[in-house]
Image (cartoon, rainbow, N blue to C red; front, side, top):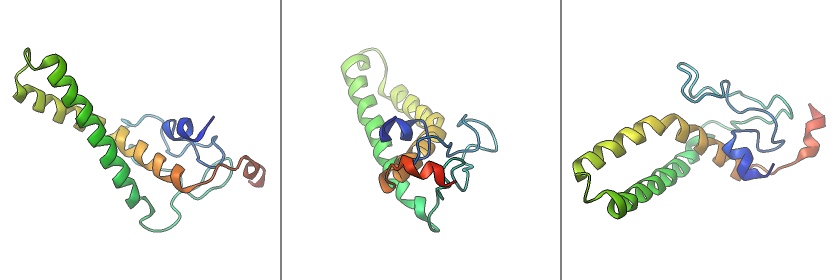
Length: 126
């Protein structure tokens, strides 16, 4: 499994085996954003310092911009003559609201994957 696949599956960026979040379901009420403190396989501490995941906001912003551009281009190419622009805006806001837990997890996973080197040899240290 490469780093991109591990980030998409929210696995540990160092060993690609341990789960980063308590629950795999991003819509599990009460545990949407709860992360493990350490990897269960290699022991990597996920939040290295206070405020480490503030950088994930930039990743989240980029994902939201990519989603908006894709949705807008799709609207103008395929739906402009069928759907009023007000409904498009309403639908996009609703989509963004529904995808917030997924984007939150994905942005944290990508951020830590950028900052951590894959090292399968660390699995045996735990």
